[in-house]
Amino acid sequence: MSNPPSLVSHPLLDRVTERQRSLILVSLCTILGAAAQILMKKGADPSIHGMIPTIVRIFTNIDMFIGYALYGISAVLLVLALRRGQLSLLYPVIALTFVWVAVLSVIVFHETLTPMRIAGITTVVLGVGLLGLGGSPTADPKASARPQAEEEAA
Amino acid sequence: METPVSSMIWVLSASFVGSFGAVLLKAGAIRLERNWASLFLNWRLGAGVCVYILSSLLFVRGIANGELSLLYPLVALGYVWTMFWSRLFFGEPLTKIKFVALFVILAGVAMLGGAIGPK
Image 1: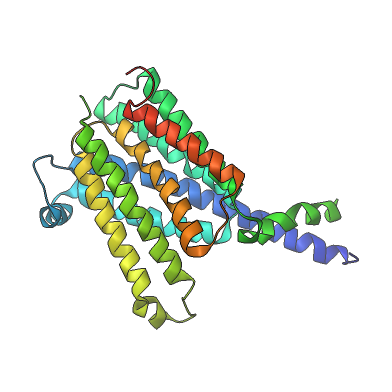
Image 2 (image 1 turned 180 degrees about the vertical axis):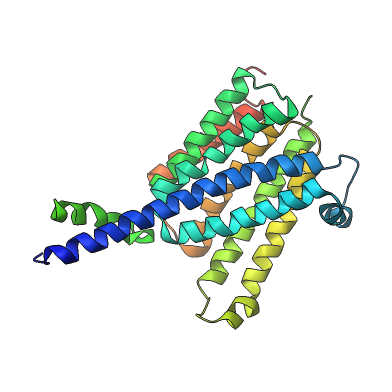
């Protein structure tokens, strides 16, 4: 196409910053999400059963409360990031949450990561990372348009 | 600390219930109009949030006993459910890569649950 250079370079620049913004947002989500899981586990009381007592627990236990708050914040941020970002890029980052939770479980709860568990977690991370590559072309029109635009710029 | 099978079942149920939360949120989001009232009058969005909260309560019940490093990755099974619902409710294609991802996630979950390989 015969677009003047200024029109080619500007959308490209915008796209790069938008992509970075999504990446930063999703990375933040994984950290908040992992922290939320740790706090929820810390605050969970094995002797509490049933929906209402659990809800009461959320509002009476500080770990549970902060855990739920972080969980909510990370969910909203994730929705914002996924709305704009490229799924193939974001899913592998999301999968990092599993790594953070595993590492934090060892540090905070002194859990042991058996070789089998490490293999299982690694496999799950791979699977979730792969998910992003399976998106339909229609779901992310920008993604399919990008290589062409970059070729034009080059 | 041992992780009881019941905890795994709680977490897996949470992932199943949670996948419907995703469906409801998506169904609500595509009907969303550009005004604030529509955000609060949209019953699908409200139902989606409620289902997510219900799912989190099941999850907490599960992680109260057992190890988080084993239980949390089981949540990934939710992606598998969501893939099926996306196909069923929104006609999103189940691509070859998604299918491979599905089996990789299943394999990982099975490894963690002790269904395959040594303990």
